[in-house]
Image 1: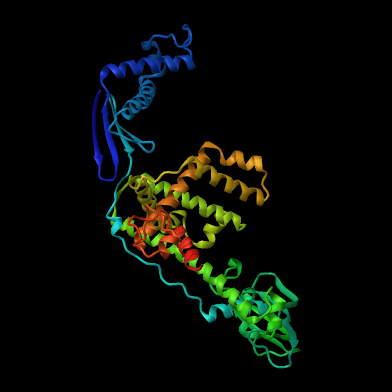
Image 2: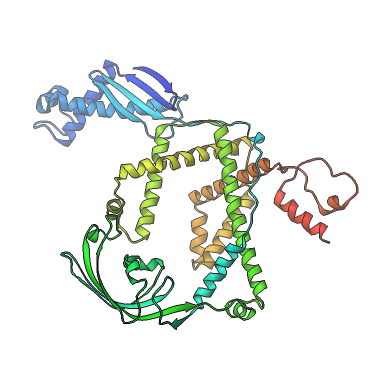
Length: 466
């Protein structure tokens, strides 16, 4: 057997195997035994007919097919024993020639990541600011929730709540009849009545007839491009009256005694939300900077697998929305391959980030202790129980081998991300803990880096505020 191999730049091993005649003859005899065992030849016990007899009975072509299939599996196993090949998935077989057999295996091998100088990454997160407009928007939602409706005699305008009767016929479709239909002009719910402009300016008791042609991209496919004739009558018209922004309003909608306290609480909540969002964005930006520094090569199958995972997640999301995948494809106007093309840049970015994270974990020797793993599992079990799960079921699930490995990996990822962020910010990442006594003391702070920058900031704040 003659074996040649080459390694492509995209991390694939191309292994070509030429099977010698002796191996082929042995495979042909095994094939004859297998065929005659399944389909016994008259006059012979199953599997005992001579090779020549089996060949005459079933034809050499069938035996060659069986022999080549058997050899392709056997040879592949021998190829994988080659220590230079570290496969990460199943190889693809190409039968170059059947007699004598020549097989070509394309095998995906471990990706290669060469990290850049990630210690040279210096970045700072954008400052977080909450504007008065953002606070007022939240306050406005509370006002709308507690608004009252007052009758008006003027014409309908945006923001009004209108009650109407609607009759219509859209070409050959069935007649539309809506009685006492209540809508808020300017609200998204009006989307089912796209002719809002026809209602604006009408008064109570007024009736209007008009034609309306639906847009070609209207959400309801059956009426796209069709024209309907409608009769519209306004039976009631009210305007929203928002409660005045006073301390009494704050007391009615919250636990706070003054409007200023209520506004301050909203500002704090928005600030925390923005900080969390900013932390996530900043961490992703730092990781992407490390990715862009790195040289990353991976076999094509890895990207295809990532694409399949993303497509599966999309299908699950669509199912949760109550749509079938087929309907979603039809409504989107795209084929599944076109959706994959759209997802490819995201999948490629995510794959590169994960490969760089793995290499960073190795480079920084990030480990998770048994105590850390146990503590995180306990946290997850407690959260599951709080959500209604049975403790024994949750504990068993999280202590399953695969679950423990996934949790440990997530902990390592969290650790390396915290370290990467600290490096980018110029914060210490290891060594001595800076204590409040050190911060208050007159002597120079000892040299050495800090194990946990977050812990240091908390300790320092407590010390300086004493």
